[in-house]
Image (cartoon, rainbow, N blue to C red; front, side, top):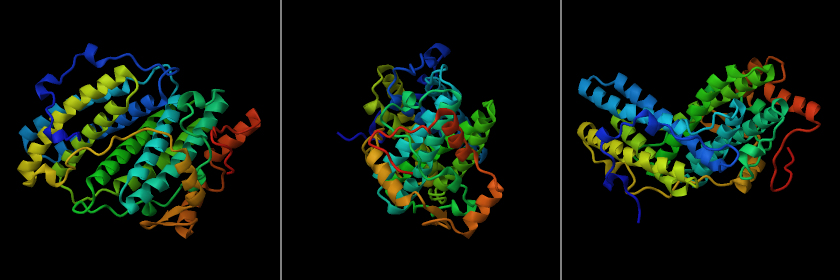
Length: 393
């Protein structure tokens, strides 16, 4: 039967506070865990961070003290959820290993969303962005080979290929060309809202992770690569957040956030292979059902509408981490040379793009190219993981 979170009973808010022992769970084993378990963890960390940050922004615009207190109560639980999820990542992994896992999320989650997105314009945005991420994964994998002398296959397994995408040096676009046309909240399908929230949140978390991880690198080439790709991730957040209709009220946005959390926790509960992690997804889903109920009450009170007017009558099919190899190779063959122009796309560089790129590079080869050159020099070849045959690029 279809799962309708508005009809399900969650855990009462006053029973959601956990003590330190309950919050702390053993991290996953990086050598034995399913790569997609790690991807689900990274995804939900980004989703919970977005929930916390959105609640803070809403509270700053809310004049009612009682409402601010209620937001604070829910937000404290969301913050606990974020800690419980993020602390599942193993401390034995290096920052660069975690970075490669972040890029695996960006590749396979964005590809899956693009495949499932019903709106052609929104789908194109995801198809465009994922080709940037394919290249980021390739650049970081070569950095990993260069400075840690290890192969990224130990992190991504055999489910995600590592190969050149849209070259990173062709991703330094003018900010004016990153802004897309938003969907129309009165006409778009509920699934499209969820997709936009999910990809915006995960890209925002990736951007923030690189802001903090970059300065922790010792090698100059690593610091420069994190800077370069970190700037592209800022472009991605601009691109994806612009897809959301800005006319939505705060309370409609809150409702969509909570519904999306229910959707993702339910999805991952249904697809998780690790029993301990699956239990956490199930527990958090129970909490989010109550958060959704409270958000629905606020939506009815302040928007004067029923949540069924904006939400799907039941959850869509689960979000699934799965290989997207053939799909991505098809996109690369068709769109690797594309860039953005105004709110559309261009088949190659244009004047505004070239001016921005030349100003950023100032005649110097970027770190994304230097890391490949240096790995070829030291290792004798660049690092790739092409499981379905060589791709010429």
